[in-house]
Length: 528
Length: 109
Image (cartoon, rainbow over all chains, first blue to last red; front, side, top):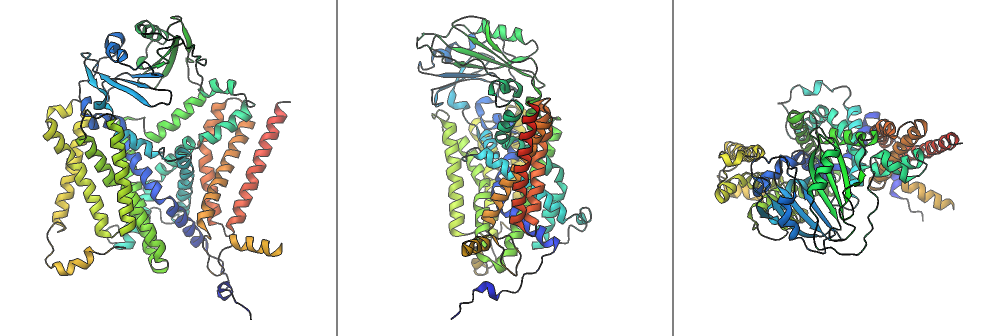
């Protein structure tokens, strides 16, 4: 008895057309990238402004613009005296335009935080470290390159290559209608509308796709490139390669084990470092093994146009520097800086940042439209796949939106004197995101639930300026909000977005009670 | 042996009669890795040919290799015989890497 396999019953293979093959390649690559790309696009758009958002999510930073700091001893006496004696490192961050405080953080040998303090450079008053520990936007910046995941940076690099493949295949598919597709945009509905949004947003953002994909892959996969370059250009000699690549370091520190009670005055070293690199400003101080005889101070300097320098001293031994970074950055470092600058829009001022942010929003939109296209296409022939993709995208992709809203709420409602407040906020954010993901994966999703996720996020974020006004007296229109202008602008934007969504929901009748609740019930309970 | 080869071939082959990317969970990561390998091999070639400054190598190779990798990846995925295309890219990467090594060795003599 012969068992004929189902394969044998299939019709003979037919050579697929060029268009079909590119469409399938684009579709499969797209669905692989769907959720991580949405997360990267959304967090990347927010993190374009992560420096500016520091003041918004850290109420203690709402201070006047700080004066330049050239002497630190008078300001750091208290925080350095309070540093635990088992600290292996003390990081001092000098004030910037967007974070106008001096922060002093000490860590142990496992890089765990031991203490945190902040000093107002204007009057030298000390603030509790927990008041400045929140890093909401900075944490989203980490999520942009998937850093919280194992080997996240490398994964982000591979996804960037896949993104470039999607750009290429999209261009090949739409090569004959790149311009004509922008006509007649108001006449489409449902899947045709999603297809149009996907194609039009994709075409409009091709230059940005190329910039983000190329620089993202370059930055993410540099850990693969550098060993090859060290091997071929420097014959594997890492000592020669380091200065050429801009990774030159001070000589290794050898702990002698002889303890000292106090840190000597740092001002002479700071003054010497400023003299070594005239024209640069003090940005940070890094003390290694501060209570050992071998303690080393590294002074970080920078200029407004991106020039950086480091000068290191063995502070108990001599006032002469043991290391001074090269006066000019090697070309390799400049290439990395150029890639970073192109990727994060640190050139051309706010006009470029806003342009990048608009492209980021379009990326989120085209990802959403692409997901809807794939789901509606698969629903007929592969309903199970469609269901899984839809739940994954809504739970982990769109679920990120309310999780960010909850992150912002935790930022406002957690007590200011709570130890490790920033870490608690990050835990709240991760738990909220995971919970939303699990709920959507378990109970399914629908158009209404998707709308609830989006409107819920807008509601959460739009109420934060009101909480600020109620709790701290910092209303978006009050002068306190405009000491650091990004605070006022962010609060007004969030409030305006909330109002626009509210008015739009009322105008579309989405907030009115259903006239016949019996008719609406099945739709409400619909879960795919 | 024959049945083993037949089973391996069947594992990688597309379903007859309906062209689609077969086992995308396997094909997509492999294709991404192989196309990235090609990009890295091209940077290695640039490093071997342009030994003047590592910055020039990074500028030319580093910023362009993702585009090359992305284009090759798209081509592999849309190819009529995808696994064969990926295999060819892998062999080409090894070949370019070998040539880079030979140039580097020859120039160091």
